[in-house]
Picture 1 (cartoon, rainbow, N blue to C red):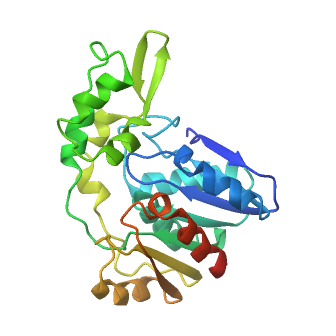
Picture 2: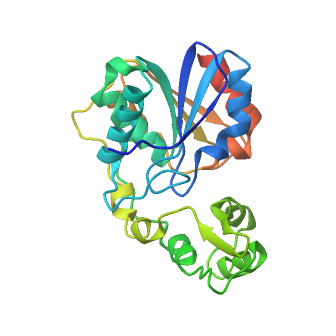
Length: 255
């Protein structure tokens, strides 16, 4: 079994695993990781399969990603860690905590609930799939191409972080877009009805995000009896990037 790539920040005695969202990568969390490292954490910024610098696989779903994390724990001799997951990473974190509660000291889930979500990334995925790097030779050209699909400049800048230089003349995409463009249904799947994690759990939601709704609070408590829910003001789904100060403060006040 292949091992996912991770950037480890800090050398504290407490381990914090960070799981990025769909189409993201661990590097997106470096600023937060440096702050947590200064508080005594050893922060593991995981690139999940088919993302970042991790391996590509046609097998892609929450069970596979949870097993990748278990393998990472074993290979790095981690007995227990705090796990923070955003969006898709939050669903991986929730499933892992339910399957391996003894490995999870506490759980933080950013702007996702353990429910079904309908596919809603297809335009973005089509845009990324349209990037032909035999023709596109610069980030600017890639941005112009992606703009035909994704109008919002901040979203494009987030997505374009996945572009890298394969060689001085050749750009490439770190995402396995051939697998991910067909993965929307799997990304939306819920937690199993009877799955529970009884440990300390924090849910964070963006004030302007619709991913966690008022009626979801009973569902959160069903799966995570100790769950607390905190709203991050002036933030949408990318709450850690849109309001990083209040996001970090909410976590620091909780743990």
